[in-house]
Amino acid sequence: MLRVAAPAWRLTEADETLAESLAARLKLRPTVARILVARGFLTVEAIGKFLGPRLGELRPPAGMADLDVVLTRLQAALSERQKVGVFGDYDVDGVTSAAVLTLGLRAFGAEVVPRVAARQSGYGLPPETVDAFADAGCRLIVTGDCGTSDVAALRRARERGLDVVVIDHHQVPSGERLAFGMINPHQPEDRFPFKGLASCGIAFYLMAALRSRLSTTTFDPRELLDLVAIGTIGDLVPLVDENRILVAAGLKVLSARRRPGIRALASLAHLEDAPLTAEDVSFRMAPRLNAAGRLGDAQLALDLLLAPNDAEASRLAAQIDDVNRERQRIQEQVWLEATVEAERWADAPAIVVGGQGWHHGVVGIIAARLVDRFGKPAIVVGFDGDSGRGSARTTGGLNLYESLASTSAHLLRFGGHAGAAGLSVAVERFAPFRDDFLAEVGRRTASRSAPVLEVDALVELEDVNVSFAEELQRLGPYGAGNREPLLALRGLVTEETRVLGKGHLHLAVTTDGGRGEAIAFNMAEHDPGRGATIDLLACLEVDTFRGARRSRLRVRHLWRQRAEEAPAAEPLTGSLPNGIAADLSFE
Image 1 (cartoon, rainbow, N blue to C red):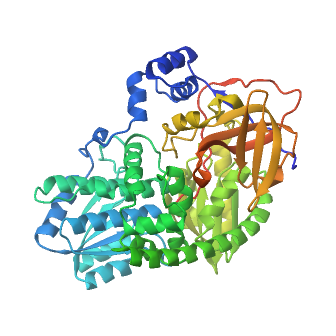
Image 2 (image 1 turned 45 degrees about the vertical axis):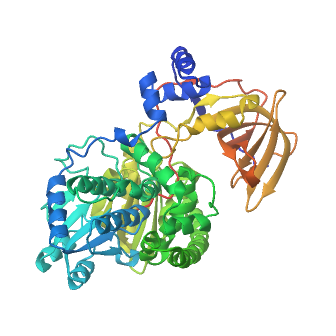
Image 3 (image 1 turned 45 degrees about the horizontal axis):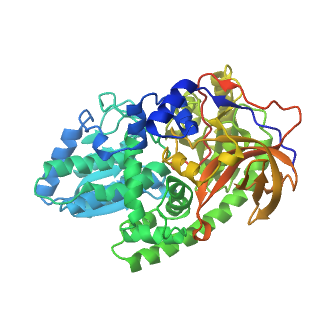
């Protein structure tokens, strides 16, 4: 076994008396009630609302800046039968936003020309696409997940006599406002209380508001929620407030698999029967949709979501599967090269690496994996000749957008969010950019202590069962802002261990009072062997292999127990930023 040190972890702090009282009143396990109390749900009403999200609790769109202006313009386009161009960015949020807008507007009677960005042209709306929409006879363009910063394209639209409505959630730069209307929660004048919607969620709100104005239509915007769930989960926006409600409802629609493209995508991911979860979307569906935009043409992903029948959907899904396999091959090659380079910067406050020929379609995934490996922010740049494009990811607690803004004198372009960003840089400016960025990160993180894992509960193996796992599932959907509960189990003895597939580790573990199964993905090198006494940090799930339902621990950390280790962890005072190592979807 590779010698692995125990990670630093502490139990989250909770009012144990209150947790016991709420557990009795709500008929919850004390452990589940404790997790809820530690996360700030302190009343019966608050817990009930969290565990049972309802669409009726969505706050109305009043306060969204430019909403009335945009609705009036869309109504004019419908009444005058104007052709509408819909344009989305090439990531999963952009693709699903374009699908929501296209399907919604078509249901209201519009003739729509749907397009998405091509990675080789860069992110956002390019002026050439504006020309293409104009040449196709469009009078109005509606963007999804882009447009806020696309000044050149907005100027071109004015020159060609087209109005542009921007639906976006990226940061709003200063300067002249050129769009006809913009619904973006980051506008200074926006008064909608929740700022965390993905672009697909904003698009859904817009279609629902338009439905309210058009009394003659029978279209139900809730039909679009499957697409909203995919885009919201895939973009890793916080799964709280409106996003939690939209995703919870959207997963139910998604699980019905009514859309040909969804059926084909689920079949491709071997998800034909069971209800679909946020984990299914995050790890098995969204990456396939993203693959089209990473390596080839994201239009393939949009066409799949818009496919009118199963035959067409199956044909498009097969093409996406081919692209995804190629993406995996390229990704592993870049990963091998990037990790060698990253080791040189292991002691720096961040990892900033780049390489000629690194495909810019996979640099976001590589950056996320470097964050996971080194526990610090990472930037990965793929160069093609004298310039390169890259992606930045972070552990949390560091605002990437602000950090890049402070070093933007070295960059050709940058944009994004606090937790994920994209950038372009010339080869000759890469080294000075790296130096300044590392200095900036060092300055911003100098006062931060080493990260400590938040563990939600210390549990005994005999308490791990399907009923417990199902009760924990009520806290989902999990994602950014609502992490999956992490459990600590101590003093387990390995009854059996074996390596599965490409480096996965299966363990059968026992204590005096119980026996259980555990799976540790990509941790074969950590195999402790039979008869070892180990500690685990793991998530609890229901495994449905071959139709049988059983509880299973999904291991996050595993180490041999040392005899001198204390039997319990100290409570954590306050909260710590959560590390996020996932394929954030925009570069």
